Length: 149
Image (tube, rainbow, N blue to C red; front, side, top):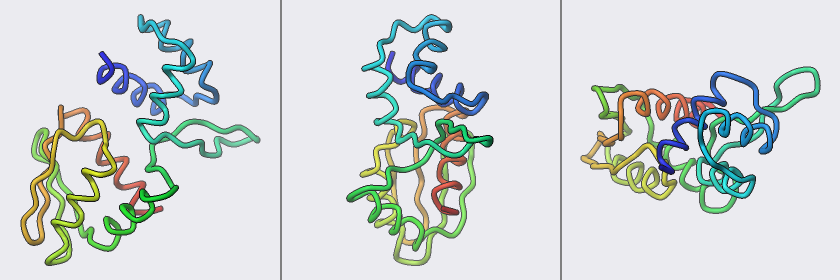
């Protein structure tokens, strides 16, 4: 149930500007999810959502890695090792600098993206088993934002 709710949250924030936890909870309830503000708060933390400017002084939730503590180190490892990514159905294939695939895979595992079931690394390639094709696309968007940021 939590995985489906997380998928729905990611879908909602991509389709509309959501400014508050209360607003997100209301939308989820309208979609048939029985949630409290505390549940939504926990989901936001687990999904590593952040607030970004939405124009005219407003903010909205968006996908992004946590920018505190160890996550900074993981993001740095991924940025330094990353070369490209492509998908094959629900498999995300990431090319890395030679010798960096293992470190990138370990960093991806440590960041605990809910879409990822697990990673396998070679020398310069990481294969990530993602739970579904739509989640693979969402993950690629998240990672693209993380690598650009």
